[in-house]
Length: 235
Image (cartoon, rainbow, N blue to C red; front, side, top):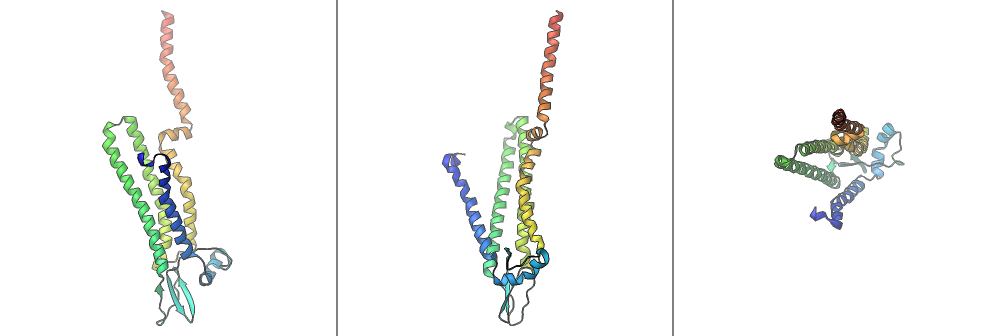
């Protein structure tokens, strides 16, 4: 906490800001629609979304290209035609963008796993010095953090990773690419629910069990007092 005291807490925003800016640029420029992409995806957008590719905003990663009779055909999971004289070839800028995205996701997930392992190790080392209540609370917190680590894997890393990787192997993603946005929208809604229902104190408040527990405690305290008062009165 010493290193992040006061205004130095702003330093923690630098890595995420850099990733946000570079990811946005890497996504926007390689995927921005141009005339050739609009032609290539015209039938796809018309079939699945009833939308005109020349009038609709969309993003598409293109990994291969081949030139035939002066026309450029792009390939993103869909097999573009090629000939012996004009075979398909990879587009370096698209591969670099894919590599950067995979690097960012791998780095972020590796940091999460490293911090989780260090947290578990520290908890085991300090367990003997903790009270029973503290150990139980730490157990609940670690389970919560573990599940919260798996959640972005399912809602962010896998959907985005598959969308940008499958087309390299010639597998068409199609309309399923839009599910990634839906999963990304679920993540901020589900993440706090994990903590609310797995941490006992939070769960008791949400389920209105706190008042019942408080009433039971008051009853257990007043019951002996009432017996003492009755004995006093009898004497």
